[in-house]
Length: 260
Image (cartoon, rainbow, N blue to C red; front, side, top):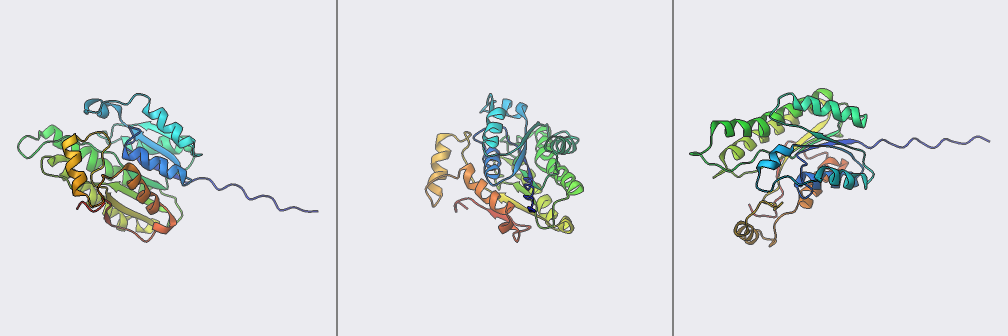
C-alpha cells in the first residue's frame, strides 16, 4: 500500500517592524498582532533614544516583547540599530535574513525621532536628526527592501506610520511629510515586484507620553470618546498585510477615530 506524504509545513512569512522599543508602544502592538496572524517577526529598537526621552528606558522590554511574540509561535530577531547611521538599514536586513533564514515580506516602519520644537527654536542639529531618522532612514529601508524582495507577487508590503502634527513640532512634522511621499512613491516604483505601499496616520495614541490636560482634550475631540490604542493601528496593519488588503495601495490612510 502506498501512502501520500504529508505536505511540508508552509514557512511563516517574515515581517520587519522598526521602532519597537517599549512594550506599550505602537510598534510592539503591531508586532504582536502580526505574530498572532502567522508572521515571524524581526524588530528594531534603539535604547539611547528612549533614554533621552521623558519616558526613559523600559528595562527588559526587548525580552518581554520577544516572549510575547514567541508565545504566538513566531520566530524572532531583535536588532538594535541607530537609524541616523546610513549603514543601519542594510545591516538590519542582513541580520534579519541571517537569523530568520528568509527574506522580508512585509516592512512596517514605526520608528521616529520626535522632539518638540517650533520654527524659532529648532536647532539645525535637531532638524537634521529628524530628517535622518524619519525621512532618510525610511528611504534607505524601502530601498533595501526593494533590492532584496523575493516575495511572491501580490504578497509584499511596505507600510509606514506618519503624523500631521507640525505646529510646535516642526522638524517632526516636516520629516513625516517627506516620509509620506517616499512611501507613496514605492507603490509605483516597486510595482514590478507586486508590492503595495501605504502610509497610516494613527492619530493621537497615548503610549505614556501625553500630559493629563492634552489627554483629556483629545479624548473630548474624538467622536468615540476615547483615544486610539496600539491595537487599533495594529488591526489595520494586519489587514493591509493580509491577502484581503492587497488592493489598497499608494494611500495615506487616516485611522484616527474621526478626530480629524
